[in-house]
Length: 110
Length: 110
Length: 110
Length: 110
Figure 1 (cartoon, rainbow over the protein chains, first blue to last red):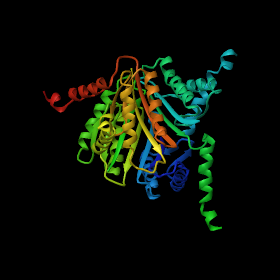
Figure 2: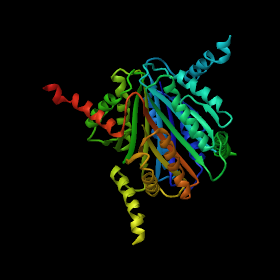
Figure 3: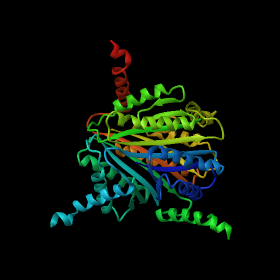
């Protein structure tokens, strides 16, 4: 399972708002929710799943603004692929929380 | 107010785990929480605040793995800066939710 | 034809040098040079070709550090896909050069 | 000396062409060429210099589309900062070329 972060920006649309495009991407993700898990953040969409499924999903997300009339699209992707042990969106958050717990000033004082 | 997404990766540390570095970044952010707001995601840290404050915070986050012994650091940043109207992490999430609401199949049926 | 920029970083390798991994990526690209065009820069590799070919190439580049023993890989991708008119790596450079020419101080003086 | 890669995208401009914005960024870089070195690629601008100078330059590049009327700007940055030994744009290219030379089929045959 790999985790990816995706941001899709249509260029030249004449409108500074992008939320309509992001909403359309959420609809696409809903239809693919059997193959991948996803989470919207204020800056991007995070996907988790098999690498081939992630790339196919990203391709569909990248296509969506064109279907809505955009003439140019800039898509940024970051893939975090860990194969030495299982990883997930939740596991990554948990690991950071545990590290913060272990080394908190209160802990070291006690 | 601008919003930024930051990922800091130490290179050559000999350990595939990065959570200790991310935890240290969270501690730095806590100390700057008067100047900026922040949110951890499974793939990056999102910051909100004045552009100059964001860049200074990003500089500190980028420095932190060096302080922990790293010899090389790769830092990715994406800045979303909207000046035609107020923006925030919550506002961006709300706009997408509203768009999803407006055009849901259930709505169009009624 | 789309243009993409790719950076592949192995994590936890114990070596701050990445040039061996980048060289291996160049060898993979050479074998795919019938399907895509590419150019190495000091910060990433730029690819040009059909979107499906680009994504398949990126998948292979992302896999290459695992084949060399890495346990975790972080891959960053930016896709610039323009469909309102033909685009290429050279065309993009030429457009900027023309704009610089048009508005140079010498031109406006004459 | 750190090396950074920057892409600045104005959002909502109504024009799919970005070369005018990129040209303006080149003019800004020319004026800062005492403090930093730079190189345009088909996908971004690469900067080399002291980290503080890089961040100040990136701030100016990010501001430039606003000065030209844009209401929203998305700026992507990747910083590669190596402190275990000297690095430069040329050195990075040279290291890859050397690795390709060392392991070429012709070499292994002899």
